[in-house]
Length: 182
Image (cartoon, rainbow, N blue to C red; front, side, top):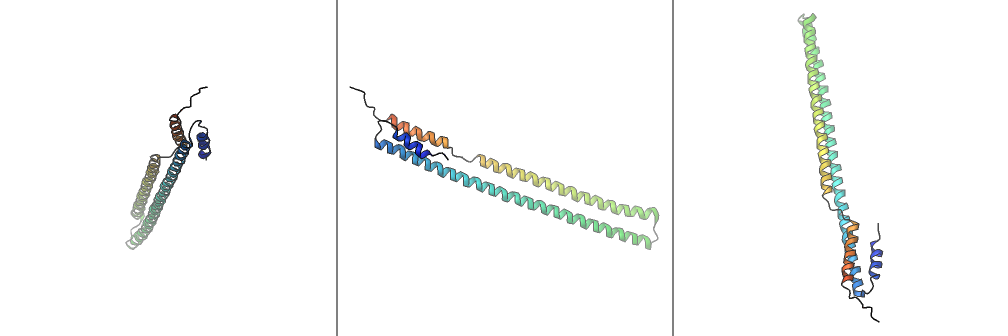
């Protein structure tokens, strides 16, 4: 970090014709400005860190929700596949008991499998849709956090330096000039 203190003390002591009181005023102004700059920098850092932490927590919650969506879809697909297997077994048993065979029995089994496949496809499509929505929400959270960080006032060392230098010049300009007589 730039050492503002030594710069301003050398600036203040180098102002010829300025009284000790004026040097003290420049020094006090420098200390006050540097303290204010430090406080603003600390506040900026704390707020920025809090926004980052909040974003991490939000993204973690979204990832957990995504995991829940995926787990639920997997469970639903497994249950639907089990149900299709049970339905197929029941159909085979019913076909055997009723002496239904050939193309009709095969068609009934294909219908059961088709319906199960359709249901599994719908579950998968819903899972993908929910995951895309979660990703959009994550992106929105990132953009919102960045927007909030962009609105934060980040203190500038250059502005602090210029403010102190301006104060010193104002004090210097008010210093009575010694005439060069004799």
